Image 1 (tube, rainbow, N blue to C red):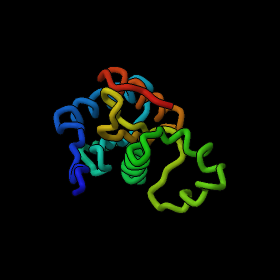
Image 2 (spheres, rainbow, N blue to C red):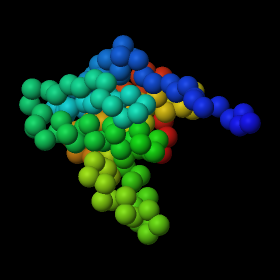
Image 3 (spheres, helix red, strand yellow):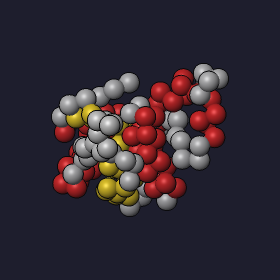
Length: 145
């Protein structure tokens, strides 16, 4: 008889925590001086919260969502993906339509567990990355990469 479990529990960011993280990201983006779209996904990469500033270009919506999705998919920030994709063993991942390899996406990690993703788009890659980092720190989430 197989004694292996047939299910497992996963943790995911709550709606209220996603909204609080979005607010922290808005504050960080405002302090940097960039107009952005902010996307928060749950632990499975599904959109949980989204906000587009009035002057943020419309393309930033999909980019922010895909940055959050990319970050949560492997628990890696998006700015490390260029180095990852240089490895020929995994380089085919570059052909995934939603994979984004520029700064501005981070996994949301609590107690060592990926519970969501955040993506910010609208500034340059470093500004988007810095806004993510500031928001995650402000909320007490862990930073990787």
